[in-house]
Image 1 (cartoon, rainbow, N blue to C red):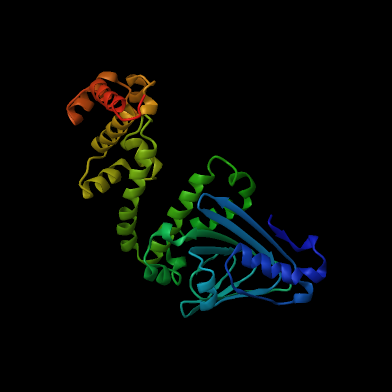
Image 2: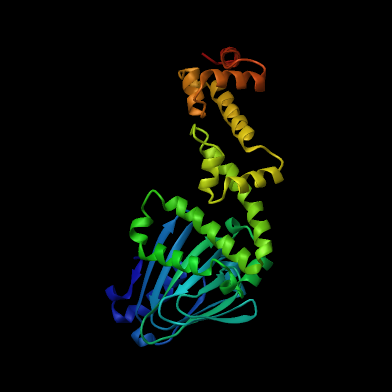
Length: 324
């Protein structure tokens, strides 16, 4: 919990509520439906580069203007689920309503007018994700905002946001928080792309999945079990689909993994801080379980053995002015 009017004197609640909303979201004009009886509570939980923002308040309205965007840019997308109120929003020249357990999208870097009315507190659960990480053209985002219900994963995203909120105290501090943040971005990207157009989503997802696969491989090079099966499982796709993606990009996943491992081993063998490590240990650190296989592949790639490569770099280090 980051804010609660229950701990404030009634005379301070209006100003404090407006300030808290600005601080936890983006600069906007906050209008309270009943300033004399305002009640609000705000909670924020972080998942990697994403976060859940839950606001429980008596009726309010938020208006974000062009000047406010200039003074306080908000490069985030907000995907909201309302618990017990109908949310009303106007953005991109279109007015939308979202009933409880329906999704509503807001681009925080575009002007908007948002309302959640009611004399009793109503609540919204909002997933914030960086626009840049989602990586979709603005036109796709803008069009998808009107079509969220058409996405085949609409209900899945509703359930996901609800789970991230209800279990936030445990999940946001768990070892899985960073991974959940990455999953949040992937899920929002898929939601928007599929709401825009299913055929577009297939192409967009393939184009964006390969960089994630490459990044995953580089982070897991030390795992000797790294291969098509583990990579496919980590990204929720079949090995057949994985091979099709790699083929379309004109590279062999298995050979690329070996090349990446060899490059890392070459760098570590030449690094002065790694001189105390046996060659066998460096091979293990780079995912090679078999010494002869490592030596053979290293020689094929670089034209000399790992030992010779290390000796050459050790001599070069020793001949460097000032080296000891």
